Amino acid sequence: MARTARKSSSAKSERFEVRLQSRSKARVEKAALLSGYNLSEFTRRSVIDSAEAVIEAHERTQLTPADHAAFFEAMNAPQTTAALAEALDRHSEEVESL
Image 1: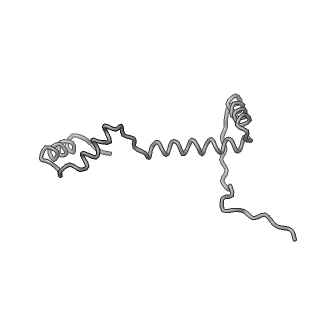
Image 2: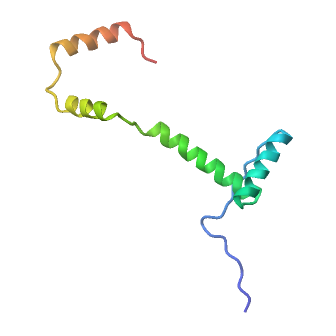
Image 3: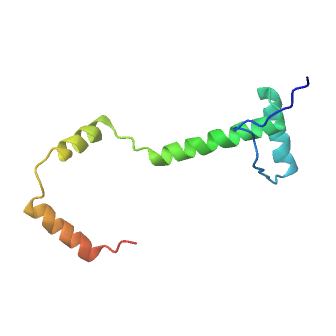
């Protein structure tokens, strides 16, 4: 009995098109060849890797050791002081938030 192919839940169903200058396309094709991937797979991997890197860079905050210590010291500090309350009031009056 012949088996029929089934689509898996991870099947690629979306299409993504890019227009490039000939020189740029030749560079991408060369990079794909050197990487051992066909053009489609190389492009797919590169785009996804790049997107993940950009998202990660924007969603993560990195602190120096000194800033890390200052941040947690401030988090453990007593509640709002009069000076802080005044600074917040001045900020609200002088800075327009979008």
